[in-house]
Length: 268
Image (tube, rainbow, N blue to C red; front, side):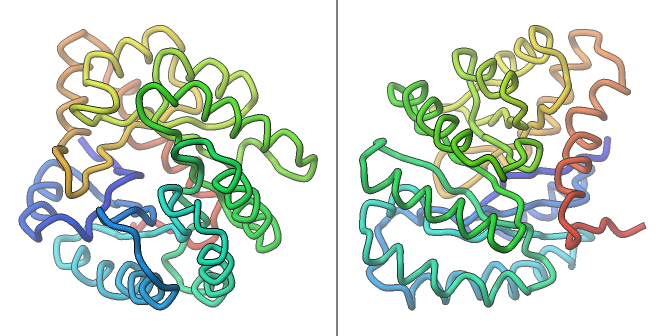
């Protein structure tokens, strides 16, 4: 079955992963800017990273018939450093002109500190200034509910922001309802340890329906599965769900959200 992985950190994956994803029906991935496992020390380091995901990675994916798009930001784990954040955000606008950039992401908060929230506000302001889509990271584990609530309250303060142009990712059972009821899109992250399992994701689809919900692997350098989306397809089939419903969640919904960016154009 065709699918799009809207959250895949392919810079940390091998080329073999692209091969396997292509074999299982992946037609496109979108790569949010993320924390590489250590805090970068300068804005120049981010600039090299932006060049990687806007230039090299699309070429690597194309060899397997997969379209690669990306998002740009200073990741929430590094948002505590306000001086660095200002320097990085000043460099982002020139990359927004790249043909595979979809918007700002994954922005958000990590430990929900004052500095992180201020950096989040700066990212949202930049996205609105340049009419960009927004992809949001919500914190892990015990900070999930608090961080999601702070993010939503911050977004609702901006009357010019359209909730339908924002996807709040890494939702779980205790946060998905607040995201959807405020008109935002949401993502279920099929990550084996700190996010949701295949069965939990399927449960949430059964509880909340399929509107404005997408699924993704968030595969990165940690314990993660680049084939998590096709594994989810198998779980949904095992439960007897229709192919139309599955296609909506793993493909059509993602196309609808990402299609709001003029840069998102699927081949064929």
